[in-house]
Length: 192
Image 1 (tube, helix red, strand yellow):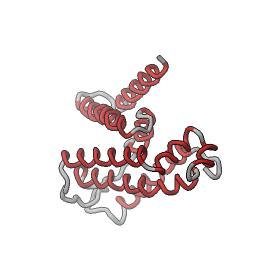
Image 2 (spheres, helix red, strand yellow; image 1 turned 90 degrees about the vertical axis):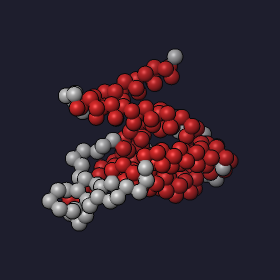
Image 3 (cartoon, rainbow, N blue to C red; image 1 turned 60 degrees about the vertical axis):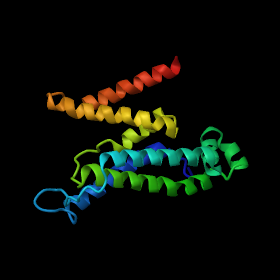
Image 4 (cartoon, helix red, strand yellow; image 1 turned 90 degrees about the horizontal axis):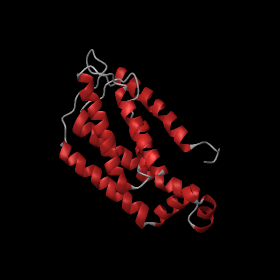
């Protein structure tokens, strides 16, 4: 914001920094045994509890965006930046104040994923799409926590279908193709 850098592009680049940092830790100090994988932890949250926690996070996000002055400032920052600087707390301050709940939500999502589904880290050769799909999902949900859940479920279904189709010999890039089709349908529907 201060240097005129696009937030989406810088966020996507940070994904690579995090990916290689995790790979370095998993391949080095956190490695357990001969494989590039961390020691497994016992799952401490069930998939149902993980879903309830995700819904609770979405509800809290909605309340933050719709019912607080911070949410008003953040919404105004996107649609009317100059008005936000004059009539709300200001874009810079709103973004700095909002970084704490965003960080807590990201940490909670990682905890839910690790504690309920994965139970260990493995070294990745390429990004699994978490950050990239998140940008696409939030854009298609139009930054609304109410529509975020159905769009997230659609993309989760696409990813799950891709894994199933790989078992039948289909290429893994089919997931990207299905995501692209969903995006194209969304963009056409927005135009109509």
